[in-house]
Image (cartoon, rainbow, N blue to C red):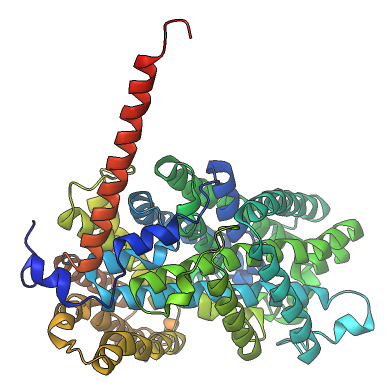
Length: 584
């Protein structure tokens, strides 16, 4: 057995058992999932997650922050997402398990880093569900009826608006309650509609009004400076939108051929979405009436309730406005439905990491749906809806939490190459030793661009989840008469880099350039270099601190057992073919 970084292999496999379940238990729960999703269905899942409420509001919000340079913000966001996604496609193909995104940090670094990564990821994803419902209701408030105008007050949903959004949450819930096959069929059809309507919208607005003068007027291409372009990437909903690439990874346990379908679906969903979002951003910039910009004092003064639909009405495209009002339900609802599915698989993954009660690991035998996890996510979605009633406020929280969850991918993928070099990798990028640190830098820069104090607030939200981890790792063992300290120490050592990273990034955000909300102690330009160097330092610390913890040992055993079973089945099939009579 390979040597552990902390202590002996035998000791570490048996000392700290609260972070894992037995192999048979995990295999049993996963056997209830149905491997029915192919490349097209998974790509539709990824694309359907990316094209949700972001396309309805993202163009206006990005333009308000960065002006015409918002076009570049979408491109930068796609490059960042694609770079980070490449690290996760290798991990997803190695471990095709439900809720994959919450597991990789656990495999490479043990319970502390694994839990922090899972918590950040879950917060980022579960809050999207009420965000999509909020987007639908906010668009509905532009309908020409008195009761619909009472749904949104210009900043957030009213009590009536929250009630209607709650009905949509229940709708997402029931679409996922019955079976993964129903989800796949429904989602593929919805995704086709979600792609066609944005393309039609971009084309129709460009044909109706294409005023290139908007690029030069009101401050030019970058009216708020280049720093605003980076801020737009972080908080305007761009990161929120592209974060949908991880949905296929969280459904990996239901993929027919994860080694081939996962990377294809992830990459294609990002590339297709980039083309659509850039087209929409260009169409929006050119379609805004010049007098509207003048009256509002420039791009930052725009205040549409239903941005694209309002522009359609302004240029006499009433048919398009009606289509957009309909799609304001279809697109966000499709995405909300997808996230209701993927977050329930994430909860299952967190439970199997050892940090939730066993009931959340149950998968219904008949439908292949983790129903208790689905119920928990519905309750949390209601909570987020009650606290954050506006699409913009939710977009900011989701975006920064998403970036925090991203940093484990680059570290985990190279850590596992060091710890388990012989483990089968259906997807293995030769350039990964170069791509992984670049992905870490990109993720750290986007976190910094999120601006203080938002970065500090979200990092504080990460700390809120630690008591749950402490209960399962310290409190619960103590109540059972066990002493957890010896077994917990290597998990703490391996996870120290992530805790330190969050604290250092919060400090840098506070002290950073004024363009990014900081105190200005770091000069402009130098702050970007400092963040990049910090990212590299923590990347190498993270990779070196990884260890062969019990979760990794267990998943290695499961993977090799699955490979052996597949080989035995192949041998049996060949043997049957050899025995078959000639001409049969």
